Image (cartoon, rainbow over all chains, first blue to last red; front, side):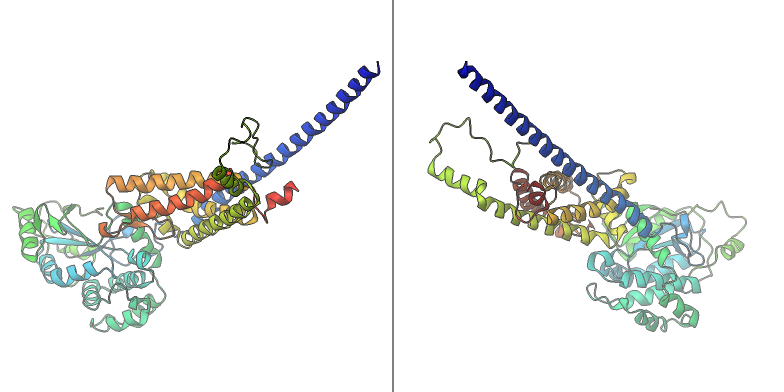
Length: 293
Length: 182
């Protein structure tokens, strides 16, 4: 009897202990689930907030202001030479990129000549990705200053001056905007209070950012990227190395049998309307230059 | 998820005395009180890694997006959400690890992220494209001579080991988890 009783008591005690243990396990599991839930929630909220905040902070890919005469989708491209030239030379350049400086110092006279002969229509994409790689502001400041020069009608001359005076890639001289203004004095007629305030106020900053974002999505990853009628020709066109002579040859081949563009407006960036006005009415339909890339 | 770590792992199935001396010494390191200090160091180390990685990517959203785009793995519609959200996720992981809240789940998420990164870098390497991993800011295309895929993968494997340790030994000193469990 007493044996049984003791046994009954023990089982009851054991049962209570088990119950308590089970309850503690449940509590601890609940606590764990709360922690797990909060952690997952914190991570999800953080990512969501990040997407929202960065969306607010990121510059739009449509510029709020574009330099006068810019062409293409969202006016991201600076044209040089006659719009009705039979071939289009598309150039992606970064003001700080040493290979671009090399290209410009070697090819600028040839390219300028081809444009002035009505053989090519220059399409310049002024990108600014070196600032990301090396840090700094020189690419963006330089690109903005080039947009300011385009706005004033002196893109080509200022562009050539910048590349002739390009600092070493790792030296971010152009983070100092006054250097860009000093260089503008080498282009007769460019430097003006309007130009200086344009450079200093980073007037085309949103345009510079939009051009870079367009380049980001272009699939081209380095500068200079040079396209002749949409086909990459730098550093090689097929098996042939690009040289000034080869460039002339390739352009002439591409233009064979086609009417050359309007010549005579040797200055950079002719206004689209004036170019159209000078167009020979007997000429076949203009090639659509469009924004490549 | 694996067995609870709040109680010492059960050794019921293990015949007594079978553990070799070296093995029991290893046990003391991985299960003894020293383990909690090792885990604490791993936790704080991983927190520093995530904080560094996240903060470096926050400043310029366009750069972060381009770093993602350069892998050429995600469709354009996902490039910005990932580029914008990932740095904040990394910073949130860092905060959780510093506080020591939900260390195991934070470690599991860390493992998954690191495996994704290693896969992404390997894929870029295998496809022969030349990019910077953008692990700690920067990113995007680089010259073929400047790629550092092996170093980047080895570094991530190092971080992966820290995270894996925490998945299996999430009990740490000076943590919110310990405070909650007390």
